[in-house]
Length: 133
Image 1 (cartoon, one colour):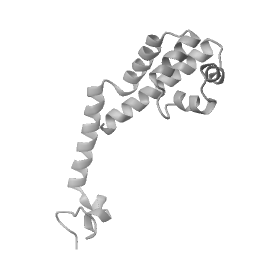
Image 2 (cartoon, rainbow, N blue to C red):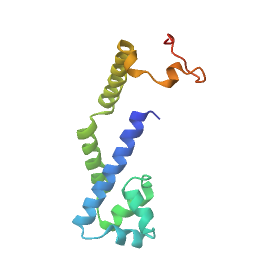
Image 3 (cartoon, helix red, strand yellow):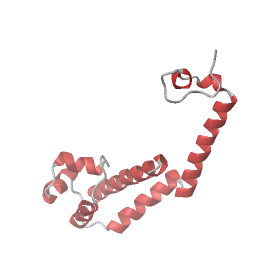
Image 4 (cartoon, rainbow, N blue to C red):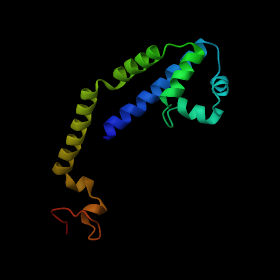
């Protein structure tokens, strides 16, 4: 998976967790209580809510049904926030490509500003095409 897609998916999982936290508050139930009722450890459930790692779909559905939140509304609100933050997938990827192209152009124009050992060290796998004296 590309870094851009990985970041987008990770951010989406975080936003889902934030939406669920809002639902907990709206329904006056604690995250700890939800974890307990669903049979999950407090720590493990907290990691899911914070997307470290992402919450499994089964746990997401069980959470929504327990607190009487509409799973589709949670997902839709999370995706809207993702689009507001990062734009559409094409826009986000295009920004990433432009940023990478810009960096490559800057390095080509001023290689002296980006001198790293990997470009000149004989023991490294990659060697600059024009070694320095």
